[in-house]
Amino acid sequence: MKNEAIRDYIVMNGEIIANGETNVFEDINKPPIYEVIRVIKGIPLFLEEHLERMRKSSAIVGYTIYRTDDEIKEDIKKLINKNNVKNLNIKLLCTEIQGRGQVFLAYFIKSYYPEPRVYMEGIHTILYHFERENPNAKILNVSFKEDVNRKIEENNAFEALLVNKDGYITEGSRSNIFFVKDEVLYTAPKGDVLLGVTRNHIMEVCKKLGLKVIEENIHIEDLSKIKGAFMTGTSVNVLPIRSIDEKKYDSVDNEIIKAVSNGYLKEMEEYLEINSQKYVANKEN
Image (cartoon, rainbow, N blue to C red; front, top):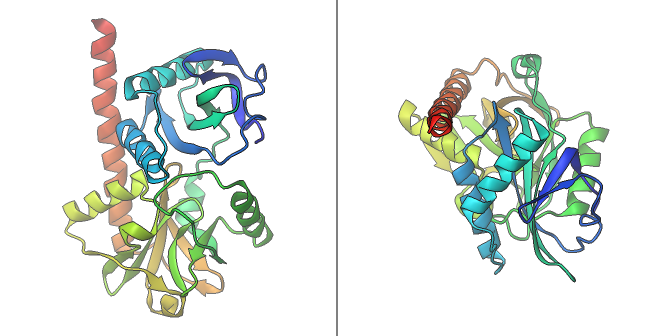
């Protein structure tokens, strides 16, 4: 595996190490369990839920992460403080390496946050036929990642929507997908996709707004019947989809999508405010 860490330091099993002074990435030969967390103003967004999902991914494949949540939280604090970085994505990675045993890494990765223009215009997406072996487990699949990214680049797209063997759209290559049809939101059932932390909050936002959500896959033949769509993810929040292959949608101006987007941003702000206050309180004590 290539070293994808950026910034000066990484944290390995609780120890701060200068980036580039270890060959640990080269020694990773099997797909690791991983999680990506967005840091805003020095606060890891929805951290507790990300750690819970990482452990669920591990359990699905019969693996146990020995590092405790408190130890991982401390790793993240060390990483943020040592690198003096307040706004960037962190990757947590856990795997077995011959001669090292279980290795738990925390490091910053290259991150892209769409500029306002992208939200105002919406994104172009493509269909990509692929099914994850363990859709509920977040396991790094390097060959899939490389191939789908190549297809996205070749088609000047932002994301690829995964289509299963029966022609149903399940999720994005790095996101969850929601469709608007007959004033109702549709998204894939829990068992068919990796349940994103952002997705979970979107579901809560919809409940608060009184919006109906049906957990049901959309078939590619029904794409002409939908009124709009959006992707959700750690780095993008709620991002309107303007096109899927050749089909066009007015997702940017869809009132349901705008309401969900605003509701999610409010959830983010509330989490950051609460945890910022806790941090200040702990610092004073």
